[in-house]
Image (cartoon, rainbow, N blue to C red):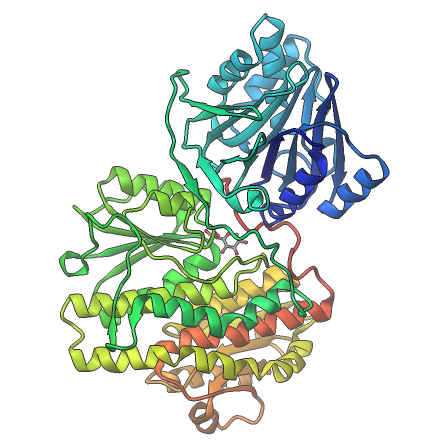
Length: 612
Ligand code: G6P
């Protein structure tokens, strides 16, 4: 899931490549590098760590050249050190690569036995040597690249540059995305259109199995057999504005504060507030509209936070639409050989729309003849482009690696879909639809109100900082929300956090409770509140420190002096998962800030995961 950039132009490209890489840093930030070509000589600068380190290095030792490739890395093979940073060279060949070459061992053995010397632990280096090997046999650069691509197995996107040709980059895609940008006497290559947004909005996406030759005046795309293929040029809607933090300290808190607005935008796309009805705007292929009435089951697949949004919606679809839901993490789903119902509906949730496991799940369902529906934040993403029905979230670019506004926007779409499904299936009458629509319309206002609790939550966060373990409990939709709370805390603060369905506490995790164990309980007052209170009593009796997120009624009913309470406004049940997400995000954020971790780019993570 690294980020790739290439530029063939008529001006020095190294600063432009670094600029584009900055927009791709969400894909990985273990190391970065740029290679350019001038007067027939390849040269490169690489640096461990974030892009600023590479920028510093380039300041002291700039690179000339009007053609170049660049890379920002999320380590798969080999430690995140400079020797493993891309671009990788072999003689007159330079390569940047995103993904995993599955047969790299076999290729490395072959190449080593032929005398090629490896200087890194990466799988990428085999590509450079493979191309160099074919060049030695007399192949042209394009032939050598083509022969090499045919030998690679795995999911990858790559760019190759040759010392012998100042007007050629070869790109190849099998899995992770690659976009070609068209400029004036300049052509670009990037892992996404946003990376290229400062240069052009004219984009051609490579499809799986495509490879392309790119010069400053044209590009040609081929399939693996070497036959020309046509791919349409599109106008990208990616923003050319470099997203910045405004006056916030981190992107994450900025994105938390954007939620009232983006939840409102997103809901407005799926709810007709004038007519008080759900109006599911499907941005996919209109010839094949989605019909919930005909379904027996719904299958949902996603990863990480998106999976947890799907998990919340299982309760909604089952409650409001009487539609049974199977939900899986994509990495399990894709290999489980799940029998799919005839003409079933498979829903994929993904902020980036590029997550490799989710995409593999989608392919499986495509082969099983399912109607494919996607909830994505990036409309031009592979998952969106591969789906029959597309329901975008309108969260805007999310830069913080820990997902916040994308999650609540996913929940907003899912709430609308579940109510819409209930209407289509005849389980929600007109009166109930009007009531639910009006309740949904209140979500932005409640989100705003809850943001005012930041200072209070910050103080509680300080009591979590430096704890070794934290437990999260919830029932019903608050169970997946508890999982999201634990995920946020562990990814940001590196504190070990786990979530349990509150009723499961007595079946094991209760053994962990002692005076050192903070327990975050998410429990708005609802029909099963009493049950959760009993579980809290069990924690309190064993000295556990409770942080209870509840409303006024809940606080009154619980009557526990020992609990610290985050007091939420009373609100309609359907929006509680959306609004209760905010205190758990703020709690995790301030715990991490207090502990001094890298909030926007936590260690070992990446925003978009395009490898298995
Ligand atoms: C990564 C990110 C998570 C995200 C998950 C799924 O692990 O760090 O925040 O939830 O990928 O990403 P997607 O783009 O498919 O929603």
